Length: 125
Image 1: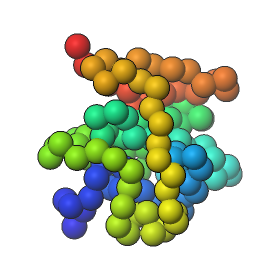
Image 2: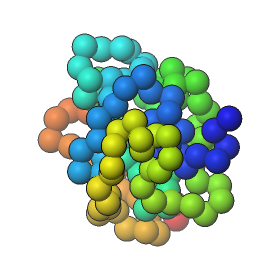
Image 3: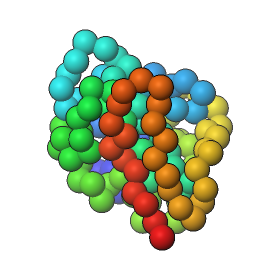
C-alpha cells in the first residue's frame, strides 16, 4: 500500500528504474516505453505535488494510467512535502535538496529548451 508515501515517492515506487540528479528524477516514460531512460522528468512542486514532463509529449493522464496511479495520487493530502524518503529514496540513493523556482502561491509553466509538454502543472489562484 502506498498511502504513507509522498506523491513523489508514489511515482518513483511505480517506476521500474529511475535516476536522481540534483534533486530531480529522470526515467523512461511508461506511457510510450521509448528508448531513452531520460524521457520522463519527475520533480516535486513547492506544495508537494508531483510535476511530470514527458519529453515525447505524452499527456498527464497517459503517464498516470501507465504508472497504475490516479491523478489524485500526484498531490499531497496531509500537508507533507519534501524530498523523497524511505523505499523510493533507497532505490535512487541519497537525494540532494531540491530547489524550486516556482512561487508558493501560484504555479507557472516553464518550458525547457527542448520541445516538451509539461503535463503536471496545476495553476492555483
